[in-house]
Length: 429
Image (cartoon, rainbow, N blue to C red; front, side, top):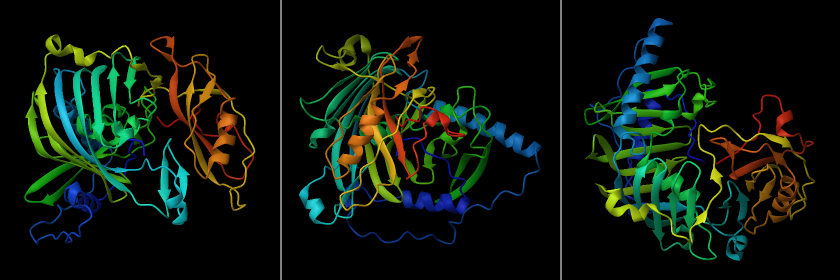
């Protein structure tokens, strides 16, 4: 899942269960049986608020929720305005989903399904818990460098952000670099966990509820009640998940239909609070844990070399950010999908990693080999003939790296721009 968490309109009881589930042991103990959590008689959830009179009370709470979010953004984010340059080190544990197809998996009855540019094993494989570190020097939203190190070869590389458009990458020669996965599941939850709240349009109608997870704590939780509202920047309100804050405005829990993120062990830094421990669960299962081992100020005047990519670093295509307008396709064509190896038809969504060039033409990226290779190849050939409007950033055309979704449902192909209610240029950054 991309870190675009869809909101869940959760009851107080559901939020309490998510919070309890998030209180997991450390990653090193994931394979050991754990006793079920128990709630004592004095750890009861708060009573739900009485019914609100419409529309005055709803409007009042909506205004209060927007005000709370604005204040919380200044309290929790390390990537926003007003933050002085900082240096951070993080140790992490992460469930690997970058598993390559091999004969052992096939012999075990497994199969591979391609998702957002990765291969995911099912039926015959098991997830691996892998460890690594990330170190970042940060001088501004578009001025930072990030070094990933791990014994896992594809989890090693360095990223630089020089400007809004310029993004550089350096990785081991002839190796892939799982930068998207690491940014999604490691860096962003620890560095900028509230980035989706900053995109919530003013038109979003917010509600506040309170939960008591125990130990005398009370959290104020904010969720969206009109998820289809669109702001002037084109961002839908469903971009913001439910977020829960303690009485000091520290972000403690993010919850959605399939993801829960818990924040603990806070360090005061500048005028903010930074969680030194962050845990992510996906579909109720442990996914990653980050431990901040160092957070300090740094002076770019004396350590600015860390922010400058070397000559051998490679300029990367622009990656769409939340809040950016979508790509607009002007020509799409379908293809004949071959049968699977057992003679059955393929049904589902094929995701093609691609680069949309400055002129709008498409270059598909070679997928990893797997049992769906014939299906993937057929879709790639078709998508490579698609055409988009040139994508402009600050008035100039740029190359854009995207994942393009192609639906296979047994029906004749219909271009996205001809589908009722469908946004053109569907993408999954």
